[in-house]
Length: 270
Length: 275
Image (cartoon, rainbow over all chains, first blue to last red; front, side, top):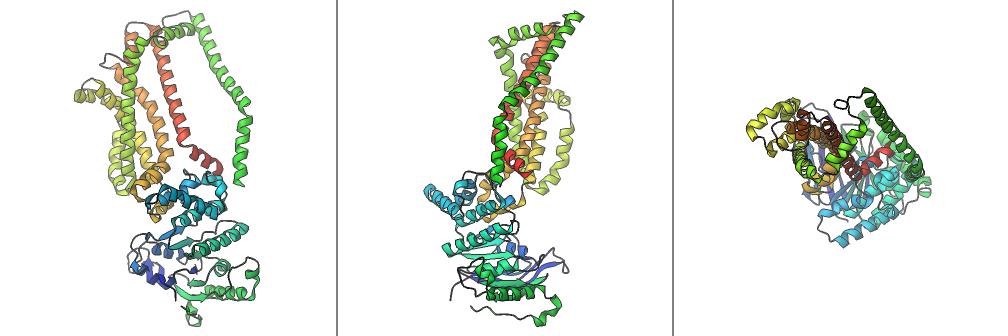
């Protein structure tokens, strides 16, 4: 059995401190093991981003805990990196690709040679070696998101959080980026927590899908995805197993909140 | 793709050098036209004391300022020293204080009414006060320039620093880049376009205040020369000095624009591709 990396326990998040303040998250519990690729899906507005921000230590939950390697998360942990949806506002337009990727490495006590090596291999991994000296605004949206991924990869986090990273690119680019994300994950044997509202995407990428309910969110179900890897945009998506599992996730998301008794809770096999 | 757009944006620029020269010639022709009108009108009016001809003013400018190193050391150097002491002092004060205020919403609430009041005071009105406090020396003049020009820098810095993209700062936090890099590599570059807008305004005001401060209780400087020329009815020297001040202002602006163009080249590029 693999090692437990991230634990989220009874997480609650309310906007404001009043007892009747609206809650984005009611009671969210799940965990992620070392090396997993886990997706969180939920209807839009179900507090997915809030959940991710609580896990990253950017927001503090009103109740419950987040633990990374057994340590409670109070501020942003060093072992964690995020790829935000809005690459345009996450990359620094006054820095070239090289400097954007270098930015997090400046404070890690690495030698200059080591930094250069990390930058070059990360940028090569996302296929942007030729764009090393470009500014982000000289690149297309998909390429900019690749830079953001390279930046996170060069940082070599234990866990990579991705917040709807491919939601604002066109379909073909999205497919390319999905496969690239899988390659990066496999090459580094890293752990990815991937937030999306796209059911197909979550099933295609993940080893496990955590489905959130309508807000205030709880975990509706955790569904292990046992599709073979490496996955293929055409074959995997055409397989009967894929169709079945995406239907399962879709049914869970569409189900009205009141119908809770009918939700089949599939347990996590770990 | 955006790549192609960037190349396409370059091409007309290269092809357009001939057109650019043509544009410069056209703009210069307006200036030359005005000078010719000036020359003709002064010949018609024929009152060389009040309305000297352009050629006379140009000759006097050439003799009294452009080719007289004594005039430089006597007047121009002290004037520019005061201007730069005041302006650079204001740049440092404005950017440092503006950054501190800009980073704290609470500080903004407390400081804003004070700043709004102080900047509403016309700086020349403070001249008597500064003379009482600081005497009539260079310190007083530099201080008056500083006080007069610091506000656009300060307010623009506050605006720029307080409107840094939230996600940029959070990205810095996620990657634990530390306060120093957050300040120097995120907050200040992000605020730089607005800070530069403040610098441009403040530089023009600095030239105005330099002249005003030198018109009162002083023994040298370009403003002093101007008043001396007027008091001794040397109208050609008045005109020549006005031309000099125009050239000073124009040169300083051009230099600042060049620095800005270099520092903010990323910003122009980003703005171009956004549209």
